[in-house]
Image (tube, rainbow, N blue to C red; front, side, top):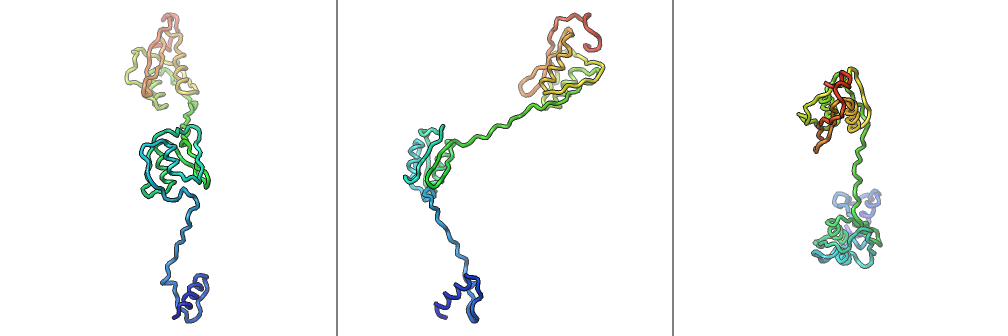
Length: 227
């Protein structure tokens, strides 16, 4: 079989046409050819050399070819010390290696490399969502605080700093607001007592209670709240 015929048959198969009668099929013996289109960006060419603990501006000058402009965003310290090594990397990879330890990142275009600080993620904002807090008839303040602490994710001390105890009214009450506001509301209900329970926060989201004198005399108070 002559070579001209083989070339014609291969071209016919490539176009998706049926080969002429008697032609030899080459499909089983012909592997697909992968075409690699080279990048036109000089930053994708092989890097050369290395830099050990040198200023950023020097490293960038050594890595980025003269055909590409370099821009430094505000806040970038061009004198910060960094290191890089070619080691089979492209210029782009070598520059990324030099920027990463400094918390920097590069934005690449065909004509410009812009170096900037890595954007910081916005911190999660935890909003104090109003909650309804219940107080049941004749409930001890210590029990109220332990129940509220569990509801809010805080921890109540096993034994509070004060040995005094208080009881609420003979009716159920409720308050809507934040945990801290609810604590202040609960405490304010005993302002007419000789001793007022004042919840305080301790490190580690811990709730304690102290007793604060109000200056009121026991005979001046109504019955049923202070025990």
